[in-house]
Length: 72
Image (cartoon, rainbow, N blue to C red; front, side, top):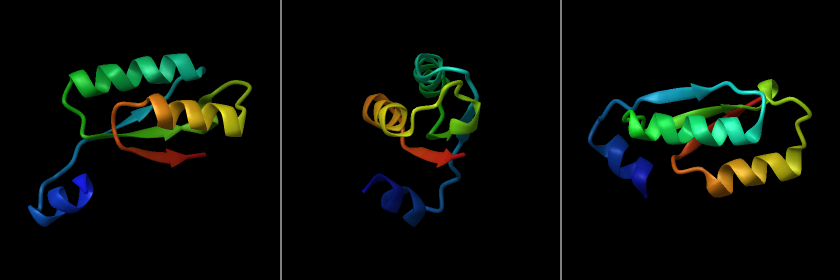
């Protein structure tokens, strides 16, 4: 697993918080974070307007290109 191999090397990871009002904006921010060298992202669900837990979270985790921490 990615996290196990990184932690075994005592590597510092860069986590970028995603703060956007829509799922589409968050996915775009995730792409930008990956391109900038982020190792993982924090998905801030509390900023999504009209948040629909089952649909939105599934979309973010399924289509995201980085490991994620999820906060609400």
